[in-house]
Length: 356
Ligand SMILES: [Zn+2]
Ligand SMILES: [Zn+2]
Image (cartoon, rainbow, N blue to C red; front, side, top):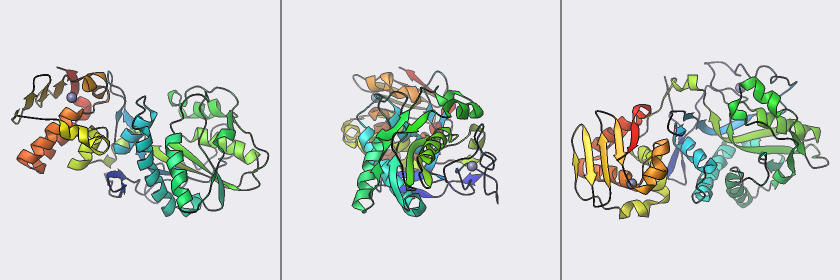
């Protein structure tokens, strides 16, 4: 078991666990002790002759559980944030992007080669250019931070063109991802004159997309290309390697879908009068709503609109559920509230979030 110990706090508020060594020095895949590169990076990619880019550096691990009939259930706080950027609720995206850009800036400071002699920065294009690009929510605040630090990178994202539609890569096995994406990008610029390029990604899984963009950049005489990503996909078989424990505060951030940071006022306004708490159950009801958390049958029942329309779908909490656990902390102490909350988190795939 590996302990994930290293954390950074985004704007002093949101804890993100960094990827601890040992990891592949090229792509941050998990490797064994004393192994420099992972099995994938010791040879060129499938159907390719070289990798074209130098390194992938990521802020943390990305993983979601597929747990039908629910949507993807994020494995950690970073995955929760990436899902917000990918999701269809627009409201929180700029704020979440700002927090994440802070984290990327810390990573850049720890890995100065990422921007050394770099002149250009870009985000990968979507198949359909009119589609919202989730990476733009991190690019904008990151560029602002860099500018303040007197680092001026030119954004050439608009010059990266997709020459054909590619199938959704996440549905394909690894080798096919490379074949699918090969030759699908073009850089609409004359000559990059040996200048270095930073590619900004939300998630890197196989590296196929960034590999093909790098190929296109090299064809236009780019210098060294490095990839900075929010998430490095953790493979399902590696999940068991990690002891992933969250403290009470982290659990609140995770379960509230970051509302405890972004929508604290709404949570504070919720009035939880009396509730009943036993070892097996927590019950609360008001005129309009009720909550029943059943620890024996591992079920959460609730009935507010937000919970019914969205929240239950990837097993997160609405303001009522969050406020209830804050009340339990106030009334019974943090360690007790933690036990109740963590017993849901540590067994999350077996819990059912259902309508009251
Ligand atoms: Zn690797
Ligand atoms: Zn609710």
